[in-house]
Length: 126
Image 1 (tube, helix red, strand yellow):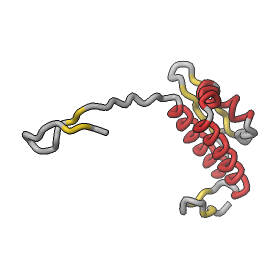
Image 2: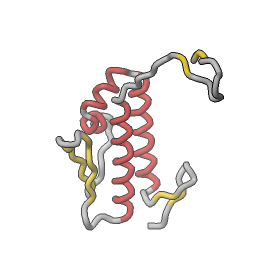
Image 3: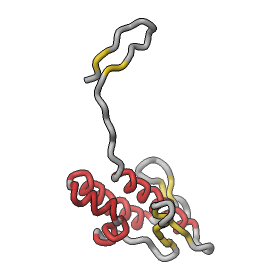
Image 4: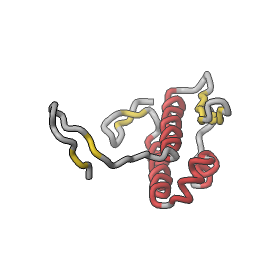
């Protein structure tokens, strides 16, 4: 299959209808995660279950498994998978990494920082 120019200006070997389905459903999931803390916690705790509940599922040829040792989801692609399935596998891998990041709490500290020039006084951070 010839590569299709995507919204980012880069090309994707994923079928355009499938790519739109993946991206549209992903946008809904991300929006919910950003606006609903309880949904975000469920998504981080069990991403595959929540994603499936939102109507998004990987195609045949892509296997997603949870690695108990590393505590991350890993995407496996069948050895005989074509370019389209391989590209979708990468799509899933990126999204699962993003979901893991949703669970990371930022440790922001407000305080003083030294100036860039030697001898300057500390400045307040807003």
